[in-house]
Length: 314
Image 1 (spheres, rainbow, N blue to C red):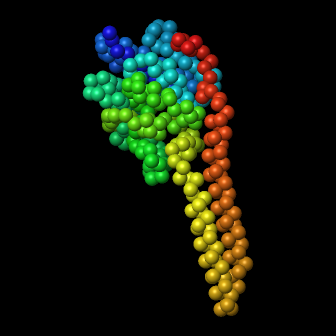
Image 2 (cartoon, rainbow, N blue to C red):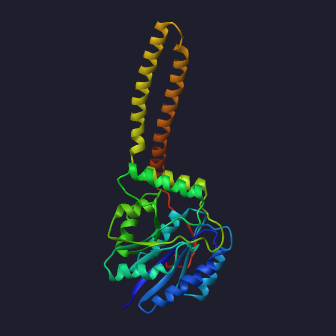
Image 3 (cartoon, one colour):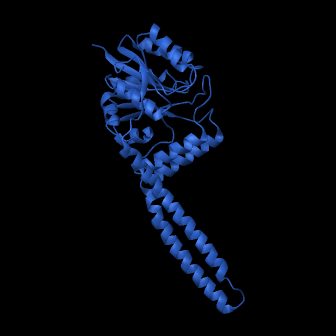
């Protein structure tokens, strides 16, 4: 009996690149069809263009194409989750972006490592950031340096969501119930035997990237707050620093006043007041971020809402 491979493809306003993606990935899956049952699981993340129409057309002519369409844009994390929840029945589950920055040709190699070499996961790790804006590249690299310094879960800055996993790995990922998800952290946290495959980064085949600086910043905050409690400890460090500066300011003001050449009392007091106020607000802000996450999780809202689909969950 043939083993099965389901390939999850998150989509958000990808009408320009979808035909190219389907053609390119189709060639790879056709070669695999002799040994595997293959299926494409597209997740339309509330696209405002013609993405859903294209997916419906593909599904009509190709029974291996499944689509899940959200009621609105819930984000890539939710799209990957929905795809994995549907595809978990397969022996092997892959994730690949629709923009063709992930090379479909690597799927064959990934599948070989998990099917023949005993690895639980075969994941892509890019060799460079060619085609990416320098500012975005610098910010991304800085984020991973910070999170790996303060978190016990180590995440490679070159690791990508592009991967093929065994069913047990996906089941472990799905067992984590948090609503605010940071998949790179989740993939690292669950562990398992991973085979890393290096590849050169490709430019988008068509369309524009959906990852703005603002979205990347929000994603970074989710990663930091989700995988380390270190920011909570900053309030203690700020308190210690504040005490030290206060004592120093008092001694300095006293000495200068005794000498009589300068009355430094008022400037130092004002600086101290503003400094302490800033530190207090920063500490409150950090606590507020964690409290907001707790609030979000306790509401228990669905991570996404499916508007229509041609899968078994319809």
